[in-house]
Length: 66
Image 1: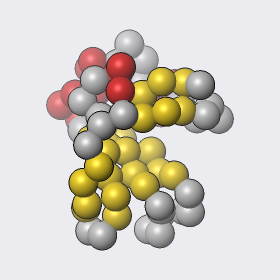
Image 2: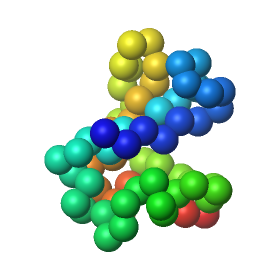
Image 3: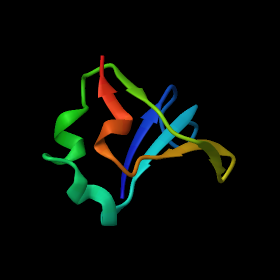
Image 4: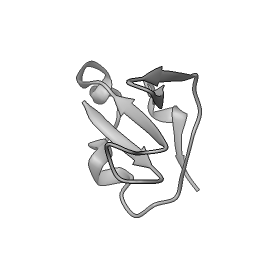
């Protein structure tokens, strides 16, 4: 999976976005090449994973570069 962490470094991040391997093909480029050094906006349901807020991104449209 690809994780995008917000706030503090892992394992103490304030929020994480995960893109599972099965959905990575929905991105035209690999997410790790698109989003670094960009301010982004993520939409989706916030859930908890190991006490960390987590958004699962299943479509590229959920993540916008500001």
